[in-house]
Image (cartoon, rainbow over all chains, first blue to last red):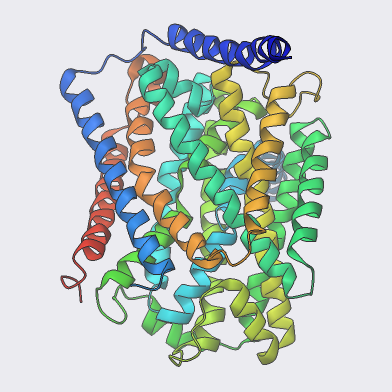
Length: 72
Length: 426
């Protein structure tokens, strides 16, 4: 019984996960060399912008909870 | 050449240009009108009810802004023949590509939830239960995409765009004062002072007028339609027409709710488009009905476009067949992802006691907060000479585009400050 379950998990679930991760690896390989070369400064600025926007979205989440619970 | 011959020549030229335009027309008009989605109509209704005609000027200003952003996607799509998601992966690599795809997936799904909120609220006015609305809408959406041709889908979408015009007769029925609209709405001002509430509603208005899904949708639609470089000028005209149309409809929604509800007594606040439509039933049942039909139409049009924007993006990145011209057998993952997005978003609306109106307004604000990330990549792509050739951005276009990015970041920051330090903006 346990052996069957393990076999089923291996065939269906783990195989599905393996195939999905291999798809993502394939995409990462395909786009490994970007067509536009950005300078280090631009990359840092973009990363900073990204993190800042995530911070703003977290603040929005906080505001949403305040309003939804009637505390604002 | 005599007068008649000259007139005939001009008429032939005009007829030829019109025929050409009708072939190219679609992506620009649809994306702009779908932009007035359920969340948009809710935002405009609340704006009119809470601030009167006072913020009409802001909406009018956003028309050119929306045009400038969207016309870049026409050029990018027609020149590269790639959808936006694929263009980002290709140009900037998978690290930034995954970020963009994740933003798009989450935002589109949230926005789709707001479309279902709008549609169920609109039909609840006529006594249709939410579960029935969700089921029927999901089935109709499936039929529309499964008919197997982009052209047919586009024409159906344009039909729903036309229904968006119901707000214009509704505005005439409530008999607004034109002099009031001009004196209070045309001059830039901040009604009720510059505070956190106002910043929130300004952000929600921007979020309904320009959204990340629109960038992805229009570029993919341009590619799916097969537009080429020579079609760019007509594609831009299509976008301009759409921008005028979307601002016009939005202004008329504000006029309806501002005329009837402003100033609102504190014990009777209008918090959504559905509430406005319900209240208007008592004022004038035709106006209430038009508002409810318009809200449903806006939600439906938004839903069919937003779900497609996500499926197109997945197809581009994962390498699936991803055209509406494909049958379900030829592009199974494209259609499966489409249905998964639609069904899961529809189910959220059925959660009992969920704060649906609050969700709707916050989704618009989150969309605008994340917009700069999408805009920066769009601008960088449009500045690459190797990619765009003679269609790359000129200095004026760059100044306008970066000003939009800076303005949005400044507004988002102001709102964050008003949340974290409520005493500062009173």
